[in-house]
Length: 273
Image (cartoon, rainbow, N blue to C red; front, side):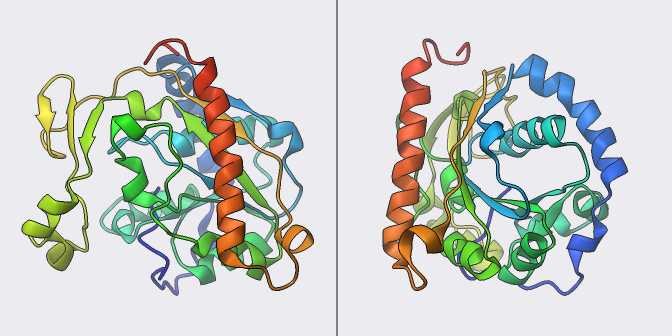
């Protein structure tokens, strides 16, 4: 899910304590046929995943229906079981209404440094998408580009909790429809940034309605999704006790871009993989 920006919001409900392994396992059981069948998902590199708390930093794809979290979670739980929770730092919007408790119990937590720190120190695996909505709606012409929009708060989260950072990339999700524009200018003209804290109004073309500016909602195409988990990075060991955040961020994105480029070279056809 998305992180709003580097100034993560605050939440005092201690959502980390709400994770329900039994419910999560049942949900994964329901999702697995869809993830493995409709999207033919693969996840590689979990054999090098570190023990204990770890911060997974990933690109984000798929517009309104991103599959990054389900693909990673199903692969992780299939490999390691349900003793170790996967948490996802998420936008506040999903914690409103009747579904809020469901999301909390299945590992989604409001994106703020306090929640990230608590989850990581508890031994959990925390997934963060620094690019958030900016990344998930990147245009199709830049679908294989790692772009966090300048957001670097994920580095401080890993350092503060003393956990390794695990770069992870996915390919295929941005082929679920044709993404034409983030619509930042349109959102600003409509004052959505003032009214709803929304800075984009993405424009895409898909099935069955064709042109869409979020609405009408098109159905994601059955694109093949492949996810690569890279070697963990011990930031302090590699960059020192007081690392230059810009240098670390550039290195992490370079590692991710290299991995994404390798996946792109393997891909033969859009959607089919």
